[in-house]
Amino acid sequence: MHLATEEVFGPIAPVLAARDEEDAVRLANATQYGLGGSVWTRDPARGERVARRLEAGTTFVNRVVKSDPRMPFGGVKRSGLGRELSHYGLREFVNVKGISVYAHG
Image 1 (cartoon, helix red, strand yellow):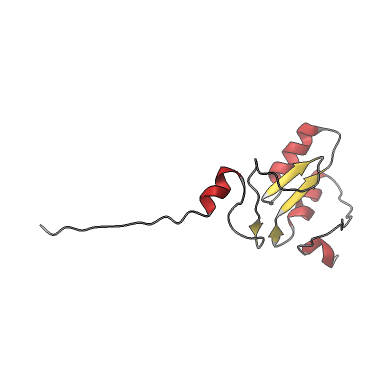
Image 2: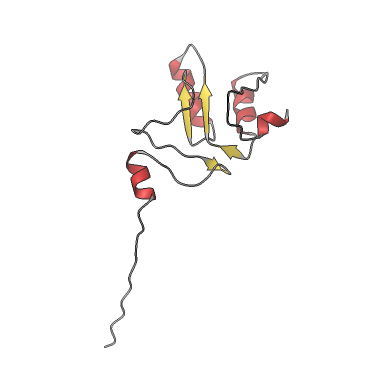
């Protein structure tokens, strides 16, 4: 399904059938984008385990993808570089200047 490999914004949720957890992770990671994702399960420990394997900047367990000023937010792959929000976001907009001085003698 073309929709499953695109970065779509809006109230859209493509539904794909997976054989097992391994196949579900493979399907989720089979895209060139990786802004955010959700894992829905009755077992929060399993949800966290699966979330750690997903190639996404932010992954939520039993919640929809959203930004929160206490958490860094940003994508991986072709979904951008860097993070916004939290202390990581503050550093993202800092211009670091390096100066190297060589003194003769």
